Length: 315
Image 1 (cartoon, one colour):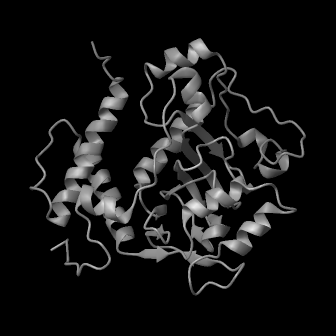
Image 2 (spheres, rainbow, N blue to C red):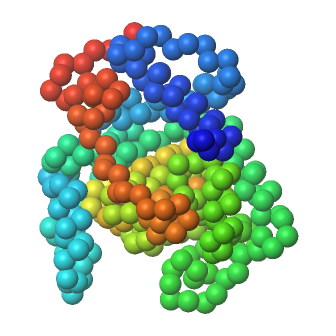
Image 3 (tube, rainbow, N blue to C red):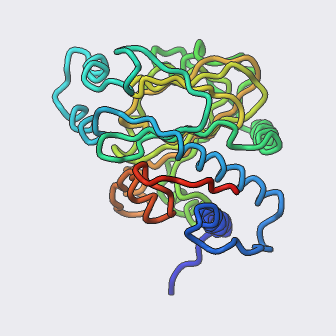
């Protein structure tokens, strides 16, 4: 008998199906979306906002002159004297951006490699102000529970160096789970397709790659709170992004170095990711999912390919 998915994951699936139907309706590849009475009206509005940003990004493609597979192969080569500098030299950003330079983005867009893989999606203003406020307050409340204390240790590692953080008395907590049986029990109630979620509060992140993640798996970072002047940079894309509350970015964190700047105000970032070693230990072995492609998005969602003359899908 098949195990019933956790209630939270069932809700996630319901919302995902509704979002997929919205895309089909907008592109003309599907029927008008049904009323879906099991989804609250305000959530429907939020889903519609997300879909709107995704469709904007689809019509704003940034093309790269290299393939993502070649980046992965380069990372597997024997160590260079300075691997990251070598990657920057070998894999340039989009055309029009000088070597080592960056272009600032503030509108939704997708980055496409020379084989048609969608390697990064940038969605500013993806989440509403209400949702941002709700998540910030929920994290602040969680931080008040017993043992939800930040332990700062002096280290050369930026991940726990106090110089990378805002005032520790205002930062939030960290949860670590290393017990295998506890993790297996936890996954019975897990409500997201990702097996890892990190809360990053008021932290400046130095350039880094998420070396424990899957080589071709996408991470999703979403930022919330009350702040201004946030920036997110990915050198191999030759790009810097406006990273203010409500922004969502999907990128292969293992392959692409990235960093986030300091900001003015209170920021909480939710990072969702998959760590293959966690999956193998607690859930059993699973494969490496391929990146989405332009052709796949056309076939699966009915989105127009670049060579196809589009129409105004909103009217």
